Length: 356
Image (cartoon, rainbow, N blue to C red; front, side, top):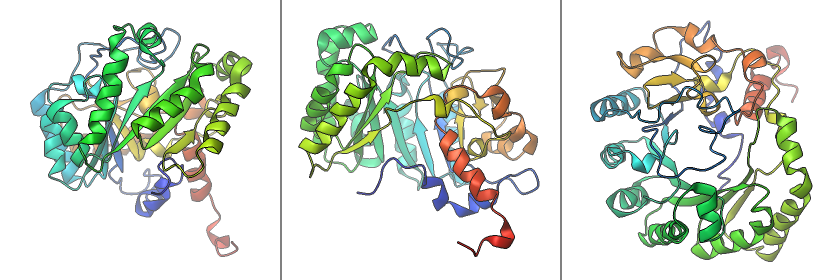
């Protein structure tokens, strides 16, 4: 199995990169689309970026919003016609709370479009879970607690929810499909001493990958770094110990637990990734990225409520240059490093390419 987490994936789509920027060229379809099918969630995580005050993400989110069934089928048809390569279902809310997820997944399973989902895992069961196990490329379960009481405290659920999620993951692996089961473990001051133990528990469940990330507590990268500073070294030691104790393990550990400030400050004036990985919200708005979803002032590209997605995408190139990252994106951004790599590639002097 190759690297599941790498900033270099975009370079395998050379036609897309060479079509950037699209201000003077024909706009090309996005490589990937994130669809947020519903804003309803069955958990209430204290650190949720869509609900936590002081985080710009989700500031205009309406929790009751969801994509109507007919509109979702239309979006899927457009995705197929546009030759979009992949779809990820995410929140907003919990994708497995979306009543039409099974129908949507079945439709995608009959096409070349690869699909995946982020989830809290509580409703990852039954027929929809089996369809994902046999046809999706991956699902990634978000976790934080290490037992029933801690999980309930993090998420505002019953203590039995932790065991239910763990059992759902075990059942998912038993379905025998090719879908990779991952976990995103969010580290904060309460679980920071439990990282090693949780990695061992998840290894025993036979998950395929674990992404360890810092809890984002502020729009200010320095504040988030200061929050993690007292236990930063301890978490790193636990990660190193786990990898040392399991040297031949097939489980992939992605260490995303690092200073976050490098993802906050931007010095470029346009965003390559919003043309490569775009977001469709449950409100039927198209957003530049997951870090600006449901931010109408700074992240909105346009609406598809009264038009097809394909018509919107190819209608006006100016949509893709509304956002100046150096002015409005000085907050957490998962695409910052990727943007910097793409911009370096595009800015290379064409007369000196051969001098490698």
